[in-house]
Length: 295
Ligand code: SPV
Ligand code: MG
Image 1 (cartoon, protein in one colour):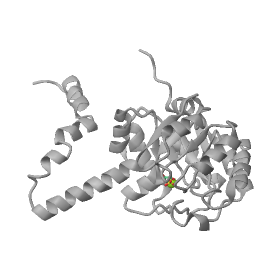
Image 2: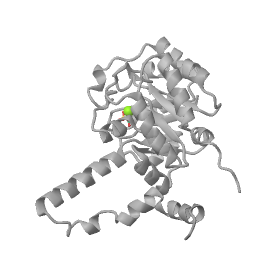
Image 3: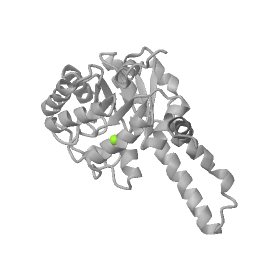
């Protein structure tokens, strides 16, 4: 039986593969398993999605240990690698060092940190007013994270917010180059424009110095072929399962509240047997047959 490469190695392979790869958002154990079953090779543990499934804002209102607890369920439920959206690293270089160790212990394959200030705000909420991290301080954080990892394949992705904050292409490139020099394994360049132009301009200038990751939430209408041609390493579909869940749950709740019956809804929702299957009920039945004495 061929052993699967470690989750750390799997994520590193995705970052370094010659073709454009895809990460899909998940926010708990169930959604993580659904991402894996759909065929994705990796998971984006989105800060927006995880905070919203807790019912709080994407402003570091959930503590970092609450995030790590959720990641443990996600990691246990799946065999594909998880890249954590680690916001700003939940503090300074020292907080990031401890985070990296706790992530490795749970087989979380990598963390993405963004060059903003704790507590962060989601990039799409008045992004241009958000202060950016000092470049040297952020480079120190990246170095500290890299120095504290045990597995050589654990990845640290540096996310550049200069375009979001309105600093322009030159500043974005300057920062990406500095973060790459500090040891980042990949660069995530983010944009809030509805067209991909600034991302594509960045990709052209970056010219493959390190793997490049994008999050086309706002420029969703750009054909994926354009990203392939621009040699984007990884595309992150960042929040579509939490949005799918929110829409579906609201619809079902409204319907049942309004009609006071389940008769219209039974065929619209997953059968209970499907939930059992996703939970792995079959395995427990088999284990019971194996480990408990029959009368
Ligand atoms: C997230 O998924 O939480 C992200 C991506 O950080 S974004 O919301 O686009 O900033
Ligand atoms: Mg986020």
